[in-house]
Length: 170
Image 1 (tube, one colour):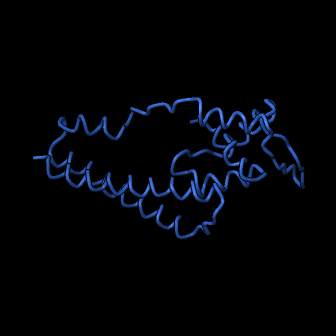
Image 2 (cartoon, one colour; image 1 turned 60 degrees about the horizontal axis):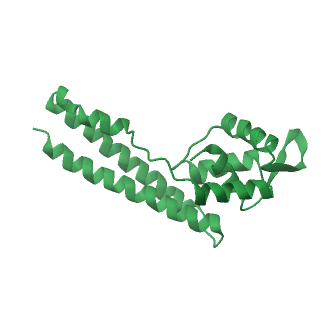
């Protein structure tokens, strides 16, 4: 996935400013694809230059509202249907677990205990996010809710696995 396609996807629902898109990332995509303000604004310029979005309104202090073009929608649909997702096989968390044997058992259990806490905190943050959003029936809400549920279940699974793993270290 790329930032490009995340922005095209958000703009497929409604026109938005860079600020609006940044807030959408903070409240909906941070779980799956975090982005900074500078990354978003840089990519918006690239998308506009490529004709995938257009500036449809300009406001005070240089505020621009962006709209998805037909070419942008075609690119988003192509990405969704014609390209295979990259299999993300790298995990620094699991790489560290693989080598926990070089630590003392106490250090290894400490690492896994921190992973339990991290998973609990991430789960709690997503639960609060879920409660703070007024979900409606639009596509972004439905699919956003499905994505948030993945994050909740993933963190619950990772916590449960780490609890089990602590018991495996002797």
